[in-house]
Length: 481
Figure (tube, rainbow, N blue to C red):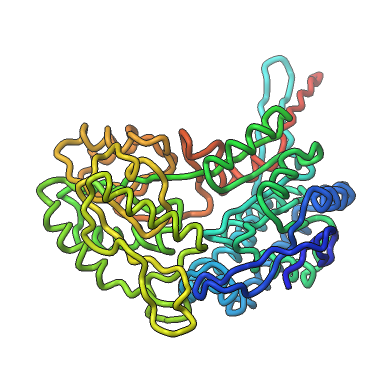
């Protein structure tokens, strides 16, 4: 049974209510999590406020040591955490072992070290004055993370907030809460002081809303849907809370005929269907220069058909279960919409059957490729967040730039070309926060992460995260010579 982690101990929701947690691979309930509400958030905030004076005064070295210890403990428990993540989320076990849990450990390790290198500005001013900027923790902050990369993104928010000296109220997704609960157990074992980190489980419209509205939570870092981000901003912005919102994406993958073809094809397969397409950075709109289009279509479809759809513990599984029944239904509804909009299903397009009686009620969808859609139809404009991509030919740079920039989103883009001048033109013209050229998901934790337009506000990662979780205070001292 999953519990809240408040003031250093594991506790149920004050109401005593629980939410059923489903295993996507089987479609069955496998555990329960607290159905918390505003009183639980208030209890966590009180604990965090009590802990803040002491925690904010700890040295950078003390915070480094504690966060580093948590990173080591995550690594030591990698098999257990990966198994839990795979069961909770539906992703292949090998993917959780290779990507999700190692990255969670890296998040704590990176920010443990980054805080010891974090510096602010000093300016010597004409007239015998010196300006220097203090970077001080905000106080109690809120971190709300999504279900697609549960521990990976949960720790990416928590680690910099703690490193900067804040106390944290954290809400994991109610769909995938298991590894967040296990992180609470790890923090207890590591000796993190009570109240420094508090993990409150529950629904977005109860726990998330209470966090957004609580006057003592001074900043909110949220990753999730654009719609939910707008609701948070509606409440939090008039209260003058700091906001970092990493929201939806409908990312273009632009392929020119001069690309490194084999590398592009292998990477595009991965950028289309990794984690069942449930990564905000996946390239769901694939634009291919016309001379290459037919060759690409033939090879891409052939490679996609070969992807094994299977249960998460199958080591050969490339596509496993999507996260929930409502999301399963949503993805299938968009495939039906694509056909209604005139699209042709080149492969996939329906629920997948996985061998084994235990998995007959699981939520599996075949990787799907659609062609023949207008660039501005709903299927190509709205976020599907599943193993579904559309492919479209283009003739000119101007045409593909217009199509790529046509959505309300602006998170990421991928560009395939060996032309350096074209690379510079496109990286300036694409309306996105992140651009990969001849690669995908090649992440350096030092770099800023975030989008433009409806894909969000603010940046995460590296020193950008530490700047977000601190307040700048300028000090000007005039001195005599």
